[in-house]
Length: 243
Image (cartoon, rainbow, N blue to C red; front, side):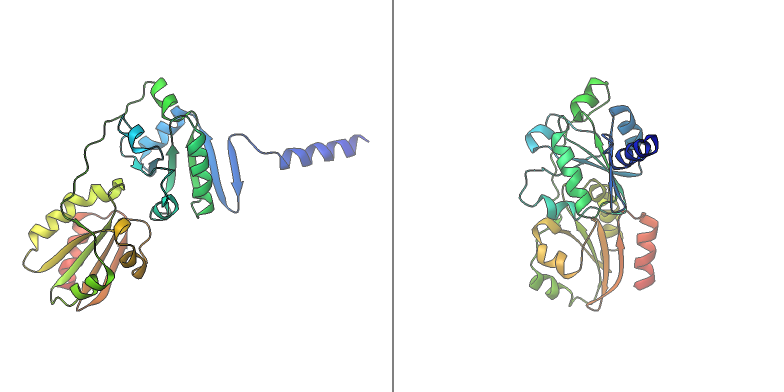
């Protein structure tokens, strides 16, 4: 009888759901406190995702957070533009929305998702810093149709395309680098920054996943592609090698 009881207890332990961690098909969602969340954020190994409304974000957010409203109709499409090989640190106001977002992230192929228990409310209760958003204005980002884009490929110059979104913090970090490249090679290279959110046909045609994505075209053909952040030196090297 004792042996049977031990087996039953073992089965229950193995099948029980841990309140802090849910694992399925190689993916993990872990609910972590504000102190641990801050340690992860400060390490800089992942992507911070704020899933609150723009009105809530305007009151302050965790520095370097990408912002995608959970209630956006295209929330799934937008999260699928985030690099899936990165850890995701997700939060909302108090926790419930980010829990839903974490599950959606898991279902869409993100293997390591960390959810802030208590949300940004708990973050602020601990005295951790928040920042106020700047107005995001990018006069160079373009919306373009697939037809118009293909027409641009007829240029006899090297074409560097930065596939980008306004909500993506890594994308915004690359702006000064890309603008510097454009200024340096203005007579030899055409540089474009394309808004993937509003140029979906182009993004689909070139399999854009995990913005930012950089592609070099020469004589109308794709000759080099890079997903994610890249140094100015490496970007310049690719251009020099293909001029």
